[in-house]
Image (cartoon, rainbow, N blue to C red; front, top):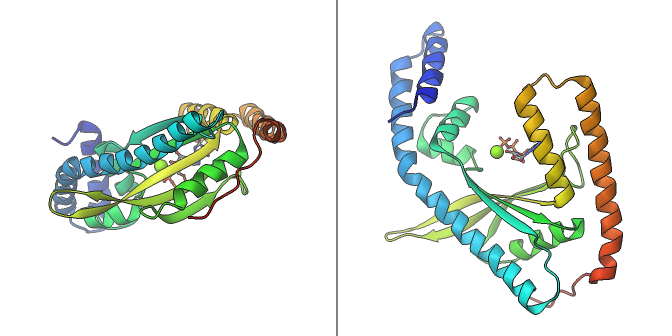
Length: 238
Ligand code: GTP
Ligand code: MG
């Protein structure tokens, strides 16, 4: 059943639609259908996570076995709830059909990889991008070009084939690859933004800005130490 939160959003949207003369009843029906279809489809995105997670775990285990050092520190996965998917679908421009929503929302499936060093973040991204069955759809390099608020991270949308009983489905998965310092900063920023919504007090804003600089500096220092642990790998073909 459609949860209350989504029902409230539909109600709000319906009033809005009614004032412009559009059909609120049709929207309600569309949303009910989207909700139903995604409840089933969500599983495919979990499979997409499983496929990419296996790849990441293989790299991590291989490094741990074969070398004294792994570029991957930890890995976390996240599957968007149908509720927040419908919420985002309502927030973003476009049709309220499953097909259109799947085309415009690419973060239903997400994997976050944390590395010790900045160069490892790029290295892990390269190793995954080089795999023949992963197609890189987009890359957003917020490490080279941090967001205005100081957020740094490497974002890739990759597409992975999922073999189902009757067909193969190409599932987009959002990869966020970042250092421990970037991750620490982002998690604090996220909690603060959540708490204060758009009204972060200037003194906290300034603290966060400063913390972003400190995290950046720490990454630069650690990067210099990295050379002492293990030289950058030599890529051997394939
Ligand atoms: P959405 O925010 O998901 O709609 O993504 P987008 O299309 O604007 O893409 P972007 O790559 O900018 O952000 C994708 C994800 O990265 C977000 O959903 C967050 O998980 C994370 N992210 C982006 N910007 C920030 C930020 O300023 N702070 C934090 N903590 N996380 C961020
Ligand atoms: Mg997102």
